[in-house]
Image (tube, rainbow, N blue to C red):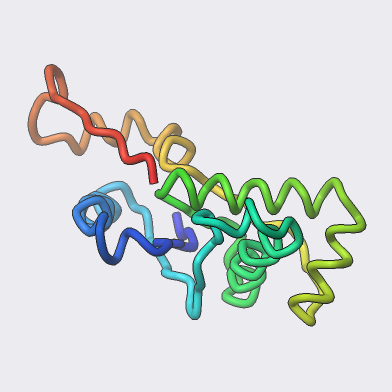
Length: 148
């Protein structure tokens, strides 16, 4: 399965271990992560609190980039990035006024929607494959969450 990969601002820096883990398990699960070219911050840090149109336009640009790369799915491992991408997609689908504003900001028409996947959504259909690929029992492991 080929998916667009949106690392966001953290996965190349402060959450590097998370990215390394994802990239190491992806091949075993037949997941091809194709990083979006020329991606930018999703605006999770402050855009949504300061300017609604900008808070939709920043992640909408990412959705447009995925379409330009012929990707119909974007995987956003960071919960904050996932939230911003999914919220933008929802706003564009349900608010024509914001859609027009975002098109004006981006200077390009918004094409067909792209599926935005969280880590849970990406892995949920792969439980059996994960069990088969597991080299050690997954019981009694301490799990750490990444909140973004």
